[in-house]
Length: 485
Image (tube, rainbow, N blue to C red; front, side, top):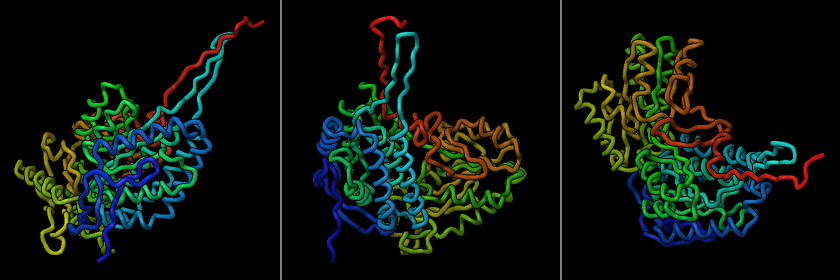
Protein backbone atom coordinates (compact mmCIF):
# COMPACT_ATOMS: atom_id res chain seq x y z
CA UNK A 1 0.00 0.00 0.00
CA UNK A 2 1.36 3.43 -0.97
CA UNK A 3 2.25 5.76 1.85
CA UNK A 4 -0.33 8.51 2.35
CA UNK A 5 0.78 12.12 1.82
CA UNK A 6 1.33 14.23 4.93
CA UNK A 7 0.29 17.89 4.82
CA UNK A 8 2.62 20.12 6.84
CA UNK A 9 2.81 23.88 7.42
CA UNK A 10 5.12 26.21 5.44
CA UNK A 11 6.60 28.66 7.96
CA UNK A 12 9.73 30.79 7.66
CA UNK A 13 10.80 28.99 4.49
CA UNK A 14 10.63 25.52 6.05
CA UNK A 15 8.15 22.67 6.33
CA UNK A 16 6.91 22.37 9.90
CA UNK A 17 5.35 19.14 11.14
CA UNK A 18 3.77 20.02 14.45
CA UNK A 19 0.36 20.55 15.99
CA UNK A 20 -2.44 18.01 16.16
CA UNK A 21 -2.15 15.17 13.67
CA UNK A 22 -5.22 13.73 11.94
CA UNK A 23 -6.70 12.37 8.72
CA UNK A 24 -7.62 14.10 5.49
CA UNK A 25 -10.91 12.72 4.15
CA UNK A 26 -12.43 12.35 0.68
CA UNK A 27 -15.99 13.71 1.16
CA UNK A 28 -17.25 11.60 -1.74
CA UNK A 29 -16.32 8.27 -0.14
CA UNK A 30 -15.34 8.92 3.47
CA UNK A 31 -11.94 7.36 2.71
CA UNK A 32 -8.71 8.59 4.28
CA UNK A 33 -6.56 10.23 1.60
CA UNK A 34 -3.70 11.57 3.72
CA UNK A 35 -2.47 12.81 7.05
CA UNK A 36 -2.47 16.41 8.22
CA UNK A 37 -1.04 18.60 10.94
CA UNK A 38 -3.40 21.20 12.42
CA UNK A 39 -1.73 24.23 13.94
CA UNK A 40 -2.37 25.61 17.39
CA UNK A 41 -1.19 28.85 18.98
CA UNK A 42 2.49 27.88 18.79
CA UNK A 43 2.49 27.35 15.03
CA UNK A 44 0.46 30.51 14.46
CA UNK A 45 2.98 32.45 16.53
CA UNK A 46 5.85 30.96 14.54
CA UNK A 47 4.22 32.15 11.33
CA UNK A 48 3.62 35.64 12.73
CA UNK A 49 7.23 35.94 13.93
CA UNK A 50 8.56 34.78 10.56
CA UNK A 51 6.35 37.26 8.71
CA UNK A 52 7.34 40.12 11.03
CA UNK A 53 11.02 39.31 10.57
CA UNK A 54 10.64 39.25 6.78
CA UNK A 55 8.83 42.59 6.85
CA UNK A 56 11.64 44.22 8.82
CA UNK A 57 14.70 42.53 7.33
CA UNK A 58 13.99 41.85 3.64
CA UNK A 59 13.56 44.35 0.78
CA UNK A 60 10.00 43.20 0.19
CA UNK A 61 8.11 46.19 1.59
CA UNK A 62 10.22 48.74 -0.31
CA UNK A 63 10.77 47.02 -3.66
CA UNK A 64 7.76 47.39 -5.94
CA UNK A 65 9.51 45.81 -8.91
CA UNK A 66 10.31 42.71 -6.87
CA UNK A 67 6.71 42.40 -5.69
CA UNK A 68 5.34 42.74 -9.21
CA UNK A 69 7.74 40.15 -10.60
CA UNK A 70 7.06 37.65 -7.84
CA UNK A 71 3.28 37.99 -8.15
CA UNK A 72 3.57 37.37 -11.90
CA UNK A 73 5.79 34.35 -11.29
CA UNK A 74 3.31 32.91 -8.78
CA UNK A 75 0.64 33.28 -11.48
CA UNK A 76 2.83 31.34 -13.90
CA UNK A 77 3.54 28.66 -11.30
CA UNK A 78 -0.13 28.14 -10.51
CA UNK A 79 -0.99 27.92 -14.20
CA UNK A 80 1.70 25.27 -14.62
CA UNK A 81 0.17 23.23 -11.78
CA UNK A 82 -3.48 23.66 -12.78
CA UNK A 83 -4.06 19.94 -13.29
CA UNK A 84 -2.60 19.12 -9.88
CA UNK A 85 -4.77 21.72 -8.16
CA UNK A 86 -7.90 20.57 -9.98
CA UNK A 87 -7.17 16.98 -8.98
CA UNK A 88 -6.67 17.73 -5.29
CA UNK A 89 -9.78 19.94 -5.18
CA UNK A 90 -11.75 17.03 -6.62
CA UNK A 91 -10.32 14.53 -4.17
CA UNK A 92 -10.35 16.58 -0.97
CA UNK A 93 -12.87 19.36 -1.62
CA UNK A 94 -15.34 17.29 -3.65
CA UNK A 95 -15.49 19.67 -6.63
CA UNK A 96 -16.27 18.17 -10.00
CA UNK A 97 -13.64 18.99 -12.61
CA UNK A 98 -15.62 21.76 -14.30
CA UNK A 99 -16.10 23.61 -11.02
CA UNK A 100 -12.50 23.07 -9.88
CA UNK A 101 -11.20 24.41 -13.20
CA UNK A 102 -13.26 27.56 -12.71
CA UNK A 103 -11.76 28.07 -9.26
CA UNK A 104 -8.16 27.52 -10.31
CA UNK A 105 -8.62 29.34 -13.60
CA UNK A 106 -9.44 32.71 -12.05
CA UNK A 107 -6.34 32.76 -9.83
CA UNK A 108 -3.62 33.77 -12.33
CA UNK A 109 -5.60 36.82 -13.47
CA UNK A 110 -6.00 37.90 -9.84
CA UNK A 111 -2.25 37.66 -9.27
CA UNK A 112 -1.40 39.54 -12.46
CA UNK A 113 -3.88 42.31 -11.71
CA UNK A 114 -2.29 42.78 -8.31
CA UNK A 115 1.18 42.68 -9.86
CA UNK A 116 0.07 45.72 -11.85
CA UNK A 117 -1.29 47.34 -8.67
CA UNK A 118 2.12 46.90 -7.06
CA UNK A 119 3.60 49.16 -9.76
CA UNK A 120 0.79 51.70 -10.06
CA UNK A 121 -0.48 52.35 -6.52
CA UNK A 122 1.47 55.49 -5.64
CA UNK A 123 0.77 58.47 -3.39
CA UNK A 124 0.44 62.09 -4.44
CA UNK A 125 2.09 65.49 -3.98
CA UNK A 126 0.66 68.99 -4.01
CA UNK A 127 1.46 72.51 -2.88
CA UNK A 128 -1.30 73.65 -0.56
CA UNK A 129 0.12 77.19 -0.32
CA UNK A 130 3.29 79.01 -1.42
CA UNK A 131 6.40 77.61 0.22
CA UNK A 132 4.71 74.39 1.32
CA UNK A 133 4.74 70.96 -0.27
CA UNK A 134 2.67 68.05 0.95
CA UNK A 135 3.38 64.43 0.14
CA UNK A 136 0.99 61.58 0.76
CA UNK A 137 2.75 58.23 0.71
CA UNK A 138 1.11 54.83 0.93
CA UNK A 139 3.04 52.35 3.02
CA UNK A 140 2.40 48.68 3.80
CA UNK A 141 0.71 48.15 7.15
CA UNK A 142 2.96 45.24 8.21
CA UNK A 143 2.01 41.61 8.73
CA UNK A 144 -1.32 40.67 7.19
CA UNK A 145 -3.26 37.89 8.87
CA UNK A 146 -5.24 36.05 6.21
CA UNK A 147 -7.94 33.48 6.96
CA UNK A 148 -9.65 31.76 4.02
CA UNK A 149 -12.39 29.09 4.03
CA UNK A 150 -12.57 25.51 2.79
CA UNK A 151 -15.20 26.00 0.10
CA UNK A 152 -12.82 27.63 -2.43
CA UNK A 153 -9.40 27.50 -0.79
CA UNK A 154 -7.28 28.24 -3.85
CA UNK A 155 -9.22 31.20 -5.19
CA UNK A 156 -10.13 32.79 -1.88
CA UNK A 157 -6.70 32.67 -0.29
CA UNK A 158 -5.13 34.27 -3.36
CA UNK A 159 -7.88 36.89 -3.46
CA UNK A 160 -6.59 38.19 -0.10
CA UNK A 161 -2.91 37.24 -0.40
CA UNK A 162 -2.28 38.88 -3.78
CA UNK A 163 -3.25 42.44 -2.74
CA UNK A 164 -1.48 42.01 0.61
CA UNK A 165 1.74 41.17 -1.21
CA UNK A 166 1.18 43.90 -3.80
CA UNK A 167 0.91 46.44 -0.98
CA UNK A 168 4.22 45.28 0.50
CA UNK A 169 2.84 43.37 3.45
CA UNK A 170 4.12 40.00 4.55
CA UNK A 171 1.58 37.34 5.43
CA UNK A 172 0.63 34.73 8.00
CA UNK A 173 -2.04 32.67 6.25
CA UNK A 174 -4.36 30.21 7.96
CA UNK A 175 -6.27 27.72 5.85
CA UNK A 176 -8.79 25.19 7.21
CA UNK A 177 -8.11 21.58 8.17
CA UNK A 178 -10.79 20.33 5.76
CA UNK A 179 -8.45 21.18 2.86
CA UNK A 180 -5.06 20.41 4.42
CA UNK A 181 -3.73 18.58 1.34
CA UNK A 182 -4.80 21.46 -0.89
CA UNK A 183 -3.23 23.95 1.52
CA UNK A 184 0.08 22.10 1.36
CA UNK A 185 0.04 22.10 -2.43
CA UNK A 186 -0.64 25.85 -2.53
CA UNK A 187 2.28 26.35 -0.14
CA UNK A 188 4.52 24.09 -2.22
CA UNK A 189 3.78 26.06 -5.39
CA UNK A 190 4.37 29.46 -3.77
CA UNK A 191 7.48 28.26 -1.94
CA UNK A 192 9.07 27.23 -5.24
CA UNK A 193 8.75 30.69 -6.81
CA UNK A 194 12.06 32.42 -7.51
CA UNK A 195 12.69 35.72 -5.78
CA UNK A 196 10.23 35.38 -2.90
CA UNK A 197 12.16 36.15 0.30
CA UNK A 198 11.94 33.59 3.07
CA UNK A 199 9.17 34.34 5.52
CA UNK A 200 7.19 36.73 3.32
CA UNK A 201 4.48 34.09 2.89
CA UNK A 202 3.72 31.61 5.67
CA UNK A 203 0.89 29.12 5.26
CA UNK A 204 -0.44 26.88 8.01
CA UNK A 205 -3.46 24.66 8.44
CA UNK A 206 -5.45 25.58 11.53
CA UNK A 207 -8.71 25.96 13.35
CA UNK A 208 -10.20 28.14 16.05
CA UNK A 209 -7.14 28.20 18.34
CA UNK A 210 -4.67 29.23 15.64
CA UNK A 211 -7.10 31.70 14.11
CA UNK A 212 -7.71 33.32 17.47
CA UNK A 213 -3.97 33.73 17.98
CA UNK A 214 -3.71 35.42 14.59
CA UNK A 215 -6.59 37.79 15.29
CA UNK A 216 -5.36 38.79 18.75
CA UNK A 217 -1.64 39.11 17.97
CA UNK A 218 -0.16 42.59 18.52
CA UNK A 219 2.20 41.94 15.60
CA UNK A 220 -0.68 41.60 13.08
CA UNK A 221 -2.32 44.97 12.31
CA UNK A 222 -4.51 43.69 9.45
CA UNK A 223 -6.91 40.75 9.19
CA UNK A 224 -8.44 39.70 5.87
CA UNK A 225 -11.14 37.09 6.46
CA UNK A 226 -13.59 35.26 4.23
CA UNK A 227 -16.18 33.11 5.96
CA UNK A 228 -19.40 33.13 7.92
CA UNK A 229 -21.03 36.22 9.38
CA UNK A 230 -20.97 34.67 12.86
CA UNK A 231 -17.21 34.16 12.70
CA UNK A 232 -16.74 37.62 11.22
CA UNK A 233 -18.53 39.13 14.19
CA UNK A 234 -16.34 37.17 16.61
CA UNK A 235 -13.22 38.35 14.79
CA UNK A 236 -14.44 41.93 15.00
CA UNK A 237 -14.87 41.62 18.77
CA UNK A 238 -11.47 40.03 19.33
CA UNK A 239 -9.66 42.47 17.02
CA UNK A 240 -11.32 45.55 18.54
CA UNK A 241 -8.96 46.03 21.51
CA UNK A 242 -6.09 46.66 19.09
CA UNK A 243 -8.21 48.60 16.56
CA UNK A 244 -7.12 46.29 13.76
CA UNK A 245 -7.88 46.91 10.14
CA UNK A 246 -10.46 44.33 9.03
CA UNK A 247 -11.44 43.22 5.56
CA UNK A 248 -14.39 40.84 5.92
CA UNK A 249 -16.33 39.09 3.20
CA UNK A 250 -19.04 37.20 5.03
CA UNK A 251 -22.27 35.32 4.40
CA UNK A 252 -24.78 35.83 1.62
CA UNK A 253 -28.31 34.96 0.61
CA UNK A 254 -28.32 35.83 -3.07
CA UNK A 255 -31.77 36.61 -4.55
CA UNK A 256 -32.31 35.69 -8.21
CA UNK A 257 -35.04 38.17 -9.21
CA UNK A 258 -36.97 37.14 -12.32
CA UNK A 259 -39.52 39.36 -14.06
CA UNK A 260 -42.26 38.21 -16.43
CA UNK A 261 -40.38 39.52 -19.47
CA UNK A 262 -37.18 37.54 -18.76
CA UNK A 263 -35.80 34.98 -21.20
CA UNK A 264 -36.96 32.03 -19.13
CA UNK A 265 -34.80 29.48 -20.92
CA UNK A 266 -31.60 31.42 -20.18
CA UNK A 267 -32.88 32.26 -16.71
CA UNK A 268 -33.51 28.62 -15.81
CA UNK A 269 -29.97 27.72 -16.90
CA UNK A 270 -28.55 30.54 -14.79
CA UNK A 271 -30.55 29.55 -11.71
CA UNK A 272 -29.47 25.90 -11.87
CA UNK A 273 -25.84 26.93 -12.29
CA UNK A 274 -26.09 29.42 -9.41
CA UNK A 275 -27.42 26.73 -7.07
CA UNK A 276 -25.22 23.78 -8.00
CA UNK A 277 -21.74 25.28 -8.44
CA UNK A 278 -19.66 23.96 -5.53
CA UNK A 279 -22.81 22.09 -4.42
CA UNK A 280 -24.26 25.35 -3.14
CA UNK A 281 -21.31 25.87 -0.77
CA UNK A 282 -20.56 29.38 -1.96
CA UNK A 283 -21.24 32.75 -0.36
CA UNK A 284 -22.83 33.90 -3.63
CA UNK A 285 -24.93 30.77 -4.25
CA UNK A 286 -28.24 31.70 -5.84
CA UNK A 287 -30.29 30.32 -2.96
CA UNK A 288 -33.41 32.51 -3.32
CA UNK A 289 -35.62 32.62 -6.41
CA UNK A 290 -37.96 35.61 -6.50
CA UNK A 291 -40.21 35.28 -9.53
CA UNK A 292 -43.02 37.48 -10.82
CA UNK A 293 -46.41 35.81 -10.77
CA UNK A 294 -46.89 35.70 -14.53
CA UNK A 295 -43.73 33.63 -15.06
CA UNK A 296 -43.75 31.69 -11.80
CA UNK A 297 -45.47 28.42 -12.69
CA UNK A 298 -43.53 27.89 -15.89
CA UNK A 299 -40.14 28.82 -14.43
CA UNK A 300 -40.56 26.81 -11.24
CA UNK A 301 -41.53 23.72 -13.20
CA UNK A 302 -38.55 24.10 -15.56
CA UNK A 303 -36.05 24.72 -12.76
CA UNK A 304 -37.38 21.72 -10.82
CA UNK A 305 -37.04 19.53 -13.92
CA UNK A 306 -33.47 20.62 -14.50
CA UNK A 307 -32.43 20.28 -10.87
CA UNK A 308 -33.83 16.78 -10.70
CA UNK A 309 -31.72 15.87 -13.74
CA UNK A 310 -28.44 17.11 -12.21
CA UNK A 311 -26.04 14.17 -12.00
CA UNK A 312 -24.72 14.05 -8.45
CA UNK A 313 -21.53 12.06 -7.94
CA UNK A 314 -17.83 12.06 -7.10
CA UNK A 315 -15.35 14.23 -8.95
CA UNK A 316 -13.61 11.03 -10.06
CA UNK A 317 -16.60 10.26 -12.31
CA UNK A 318 -16.47 12.48 -15.45
CA UNK A 319 -20.27 12.26 -15.70
CA UNK A 320 -20.77 14.01 -12.33
CA UNK A 321 -22.23 17.51 -12.55
CA UNK A 322 -22.28 18.26 -8.82
CA UNK A 323 -20.09 16.84 -6.09
CA UNK A 324 -20.64 16.25 -2.38
CA UNK A 325 -20.87 18.64 0.52
CA UNK A 326 -17.69 18.95 2.54
CA UNK A 327 -18.69 16.33 5.14
CA UNK A 328 -21.59 14.31 6.52
CA UNK A 329 -22.32 16.72 9.40
CA UNK A 330 -23.02 19.34 6.73
CA UNK A 331 -25.49 16.96 5.09
CA UNK A 332 -27.26 16.49 8.43
CA UNK A 333 -27.37 20.25 9.04
CA UNK A 334 -28.84 21.03 5.61
CA UNK A 335 -31.38 18.22 5.90
CA UNK A 336 -32.58 19.59 9.26
CA UNK A 337 -33.09 23.03 7.71
CA UNK A 338 -35.11 21.56 4.85
CA UNK A 339 -37.22 19.39 7.15
CA UNK A 340 -37.91 22.36 9.42
CA UNK A 341 -39.02 24.51 6.49
CA UNK A 342 -41.39 21.80 5.29
CA UNK A 343 -42.71 21.49 8.82
CA UNK A 344 -43.49 25.22 8.77
CA UNK A 345 -45.48 24.86 5.57
CA UNK A 346 -43.00 25.15 2.72
CA UNK A 347 -44.37 23.68 -0.50
CA UNK A 348 -42.13 20.99 -1.98
CA UNK A 349 -41.45 21.25 -5.71
CA UNK A 350 -38.42 18.95 -5.57
CA UNK A 351 -37.44 16.97 -2.48
CA UNK A 352 -33.81 16.10 -2.93
CA UNK A 353 -31.84 15.49 0.24
CA UNK A 354 -29.15 13.04 1.33
CA UNK A 355 -28.19 10.39 -1.21
CA UNK A 356 -29.04 7.04 0.40
CA UNK A 357 -28.24 4.59 -2.38
CA UNK A 358 -24.84 2.87 -2.74
CA UNK A 359 -22.16 3.94 -3.38
CA UNK A 360 -23.16 7.59 -2.84
CA UNK A 361 -24.41 6.82 0.67
CA UNK A 362 -20.79 6.54 1.82
CA UNK A 363 -20.17 10.16 0.90
CA UNK A 364 -21.61 13.56 1.81
CA UNK A 365 -23.97 13.91 -1.14
CA UNK A 366 -27.11 16.06 -1.02
CA UNK A 367 -29.40 16.22 -4.03
CA UNK A 368 -30.82 19.61 -5.09
CA UNK A 369 -34.02 20.67 -3.34
CA UNK A 370 -36.63 23.26 -4.37
CA UNK A 371 -39.11 24.68 -1.85
CA UNK A 372 -41.69 27.47 -2.12
CA UNK A 373 -42.64 29.73 0.79
CA UNK A 374 -44.73 32.81 1.46
CA UNK A 375 -43.21 33.76 4.83
CA UNK A 376 -39.90 35.65 4.58
CA UNK A 377 -39.21 35.17 8.28
CA UNK A 378 -38.52 31.44 7.93
CA UNK A 379 -34.96 30.31 8.61
CA UNK A 380 -34.74 28.78 5.14
CA UNK A 381 -35.13 32.32 3.75
CA UNK A 382 -33.08 34.18 6.33
CA UNK A 383 -30.13 31.87 6.99
CA UNK A 384 -27.28 30.80 4.75
CA UNK A 385 -27.90 27.12 3.94
CA UNK A 386 -24.52 26.35 2.30
CA UNK A 387 -26.00 23.51 0.29
CA UNK A 388 -28.06 23.05 -2.92
CA UNK A 389 -31.40 24.22 -1.54
CA UNK A 390 -33.41 26.80 -3.50
CA UNK A 391 -36.32 28.62 -1.87
CA UNK A 392 -38.93 30.33 -4.08
CA UNK A 393 -41.16 33.33 -3.39
CA UNK A 394 -43.57 34.97 -5.82
CA UNK A 395 -44.01 38.72 -6.21
CA UNK A 396 -46.57 40.95 -7.92
CA UNK A 397 -44.56 43.99 -8.99
CA UNK A 398 -41.18 45.66 -8.91
CA UNK A 399 -41.65 47.27 -5.50
CA UNK A 400 -42.51 43.94 -3.90
CA UNK A 401 -39.55 42.27 -5.58
CA UNK A 402 -37.17 44.85 -4.10
CA UNK A 403 -38.80 44.59 -0.68
CA UNK A 404 -38.49 40.80 -0.62
CA UNK A 405 -34.92 40.85 -1.91
CA UNK A 406 -33.83 43.30 0.78
CA UNK A 407 -35.65 41.49 3.60
CA UNK A 408 -32.59 39.68 5.00
CA UNK A 409 -29.58 40.74 7.03
CA UNK A 410 -27.32 39.87 4.11
CA UNK A 411 -26.31 42.03 1.17
CA UNK A 412 -23.49 40.33 -0.68
CA UNK A 413 -24.88 39.74 -4.17
CA UNK A 414 -28.05 39.66 -6.24
CA UNK A 415 -29.14 38.86 -9.78
CA UNK A 416 -31.85 40.50 -11.90
CA UNK A 417 -33.37 38.85 -14.97
CA UNK A 418 -35.39 40.97 -17.41
CA UNK A 419 -35.36 42.01 -21.08
CA UNK A 420 -36.63 45.49 -20.20
CA UNK A 421 -34.22 48.32 -21.00
CA UNK A 422 -34.67 50.38 -17.83
CA UNK A 423 -35.94 48.05 -15.12
CA UNK A 424 -32.78 46.03 -14.32
CA UNK A 425 -30.65 49.08 -13.59
CA UNK A 426 -33.46 50.71 -11.61
CA UNK A 427 -33.83 47.56 -9.49
CA UNK A 428 -30.06 47.11 -9.13
CA UNK A 429 -29.73 50.61 -7.68
CA UNK A 430 -32.49 49.88 -5.14
CA UNK A 431 -31.04 46.58 -3.92
CA UNK A 432 -29.03 46.52 -0.69
CA UNK A 433 -26.25 44.49 -2.24
CA UNK A 434 -22.56 44.94 -2.98
CA UNK A 435 -22.76 43.17 -6.34
CA UNK A 436 -25.68 42.94 -8.75
CA UNK A 437 -25.61 40.93 -11.97
CA UNK A 438 -28.11 41.59 -14.75
CA UNK A 439 -29.13 38.56 -16.81
CA UNK A 440 -26.13 36.75 -15.38
CA UNK A 441 -24.70 35.22 -12.23
CA UNK A 442 -21.16 35.31 -10.76
CA UNK A 443 -19.85 37.62 -13.48
CA UNK A 444 -16.80 38.78 -11.51
CA UNK A 445 -13.61 40.52 -12.63
CA UNK A 446 -10.50 41.47 -10.68
CA UNK A 447 -10.74 45.06 -11.90
CA UNK A 448 -14.00 45.62 -10.03
CA UNK A 449 -14.74 45.56 -6.31
CA UNK A 450 -16.77 42.86 -4.62
CA UNK A 451 -18.05 42.78 -1.08
CA UNK A 452 -21.12 43.11 1.06
CA UNK A 453 -23.67 45.50 2.44
CA UNK A 454 -25.17 45.00 5.90
CA UNK A 455 -24.06 41.76 7.61
CA UNK A 456 -22.22 40.49 4.54
CA UNK A 457 -19.02 42.22 5.52
CA UNK A 458 -16.92 45.35 5.40
CA UNK A 459 -14.22 46.52 3.05
CA UNK A 460 -13.91 45.19 -0.46
CA UNK A 461 -12.18 42.32 -2.19
CA UNK A 462 -10.83 42.74 -5.72
CA UNK A 463 -10.76 46.03 -7.62
CA UNK A 464 -8.75 49.10 -6.69
CA UNK A 465 -10.24 49.34 -3.20
CA UNK A 466 -8.86 45.98 -2.01
CA UNK A 467 -5.36 47.32 -1.48
CA UNK A 468 -6.65 49.88 1.03
CA UNK A 469 -7.02 47.08 3.59
CA UNK A 470 -3.25 46.59 3.59
CA UNK A 471 -1.80 50.12 3.49
CA UNK A 472 -1.38 53.13 5.72
CA UNK A 473 -1.53 56.70 4.42
CA UNK A 474 1.20 59.04 5.65
CA UNK A 475 1.14 62.81 5.12
CA UNK A 476 4.56 64.49 5.02
CA UNK A 477 4.53 68.30 5.01
CA UNK A 478 7.62 70.21 3.84
CA UNK A 479 7.79 73.90 4.69
CA UNK A 480 10.27 76.26 3.03
CA UNK A 481 12.77 77.83 5.43
CA UNK A 482 12.46 81.15 3.59
CA UNK A 483 9.46 82.70 1.89
CA UNK A 484 9.33 82.35 -1.88
CA UNK A 485 10.25 85.47 -3.87
